[in-house]
Image (tube, rainbow, N blue to C red):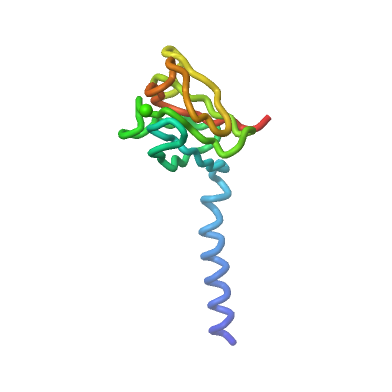
Length: 118
Ligand SMILES: [Ca+2]
């Protein structure tokens, strides 16, 4: 009986120790995008990001993306021609499947930030 009680007490302590950091952390909203080097969703990268977080597009896709899929017409993401979501070289908000991009944006995206649904 004593052993069982001790085990339970240790388990409770461990549980509290594990719960403490996550309760202090900001909730994260992970979201997935398809970034594609070719038009019509060809040669794609499964790209994981978070809502309201700017992410630079990795080598191999940076300045090469020609189509994208946000997996929902209601999931909008801002795509930027500059890294670090800098607006100076232009940006566009896209949602759902975009099989082609206009000349201003084709082979130009360097960063992306997805928006929280309003
Ligand atoms: Ca391309």
